[in-house]
Image (cartoon, rainbow, N blue to C red; front, side, top):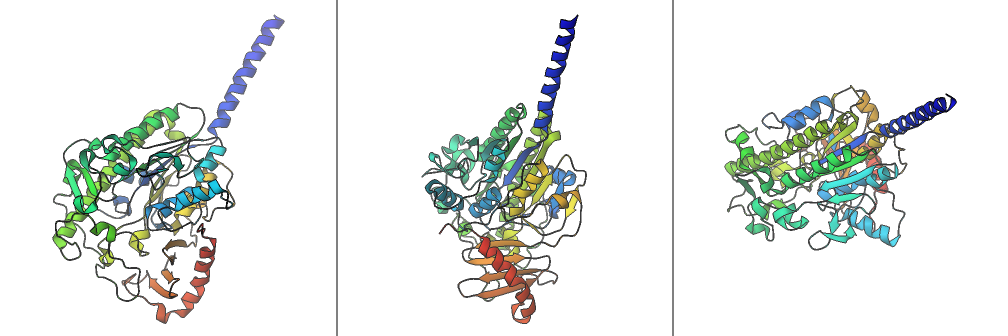
Length: 479
C-alpha cells in the first residue's frame, strides 16, 4: 500500500512539473511579423476607400491601428535596419551589411538585433522572404551567398523560395513566370497576367511562410516568425484577378501633384523612370498616371490576399490565441504627390506607412492617432511578450498606447542622404546638413507640405531643431 501511495505521489509530482514547464513556456507569446514592401497606407482601414484590402482591414479592426506611423528612412535597407535593431542607422540600402561587417571586424560595440535578442530569450526565430533588405538575408552577386549574412546570429532559419526566378536577386524584381530584371528599361513598369498566385514570387513566399508557421506552432518554445512580401514593390506585377477590383473604380484625385518650388527634398523618381514606360510619363499623362495607380492597387490587393492566407493558417494551427501579430509597411510611396513617383523623399508620402499590432491579450482595439515610428516596435514587442527590454534602443514602447487610447506627445525622426526630418503632431521640420537650409510645414493648414513657412516661424524652429539634432547624434553611421 505504501509503495502504491509513493507511486501516486511520484505521478502527481511529474504531472505537476510537466504542467509547470508548459505554463512557463506559454508565458511568452509568439510573434508573427508581416513586412510588406513599398506599402503606403493605401488601405481601406487607413482611409483609402477604393482599395480592396479585406484581410488587413480585418486585422486592423481587431488590433490597434497606428494611423500616424512613420518609418525612419524612406527606402528599404535603412528602414529595415531600424526595424531589426531598434536604432537609427546608416541611410543606405547596405545599412545591415555595414553593421554585419563591423560586427565581424569587432570594430564597434554592436548591439544585438531584435531576432537575436528574442532568440536569447528562448524564441525560435525564422524569417521568410524580404525581411531585411535582401530577400533571404544574404549577400553576393545573386544574394544567395551563405558566407555573407545580413543579420548575423539573428535567425535560426532565413529562407527565400526562388522558384523560376533562380535566385533571390531574380525574385526581388521578378515578373510573371520567372522573368528577371537585368535591364530595367527592358522590363515592363506594370503587368497583369492570368494565372495563380505563384506566377509571381510572393505566392511562393506565402506558401513557405505558412509551412514554417505550421511547423513552429507544433513546438513548445515560443516562435518569432517574420514573413516579408515583396509587392507592391516595383515593377507592379500581380495576377490578373486582382486588377478586376479596379477596372471601373473611380480613383481619388492626386493631392498636391505639382513639383514644389525652391530647395526641397524633391527628386526625379529615378527608380520608377528606369522601367519600360512605352514613352509615357505619369507627370504629364493623367490617363497613364491612373493606369499606374490601378496596378499599384492590384499589388496591394495581391499582398492583402497573402496576409489573409497566413492569418488563416495561424488560426488553423491553434497558435492564434497566443500570438502577437504585427503588420508593417517598410516605407511609404508617392503616387504623383509633389510630382514624384516613388520613395526617397522626406515628404509625408514617403515616410508614412501602415502599422497594425494585434495582441490577443488586449481588448482595446481601435485607431491611434499619436505619432509613432518604426524604432518603437522592438521595445514594444519586448513589453508585450515579457522579454527584458534593452536599454540601447532609440524608440519608445507603444504598450501603453495599445492598452489605452491616451494622448502622448511623440515625434518621428527620419533621414536620407544628409537630410533629416522631425515630424510632430503639427509640423514637419526638414534640415539639410550640406547647406544648413530648413523647411517647415504645418499640417494643420490646407497647404500642408506644399508651403514652406520656415522664414516666418523662427520660434518654432528654435524649439524643434534641438530635438532633431539630438536624434541626429544618436544615429549610427559606421563611418
